[in-house]
Image (cartoon, rainbow, N blue to C red; front, side, top):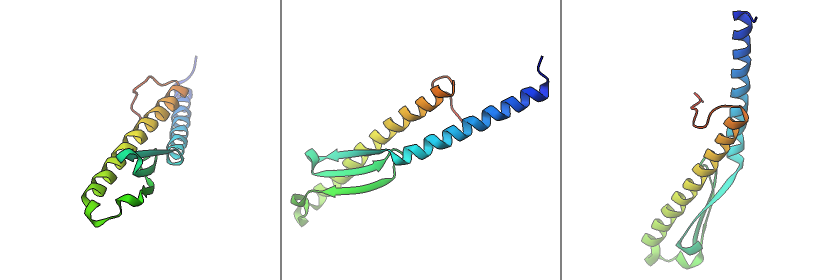
Length: 111
């Protein structure tokens, strides 16, 4: 039979392993890229799965003062598209990490 001290040490080791793997997953999320698109591809925004904006692409046809309002709306729409995709990728990666650790789906870790 394990002593209480052995059980505490095992729990601490498991917590350290979970913390390390979750940190690795968070780092991976910053290296995964998604692209949000609006206006049929006239505006594109690349983001990391953590939501960091990497780049913005704007079609030359939108670079006219009369198109300023449309361009602003398309940039916002492309960003929201990218953010939604980033959230989806992040959720999938975190679920995979938790599954690999044997944690139940939806288990909230304090990270």
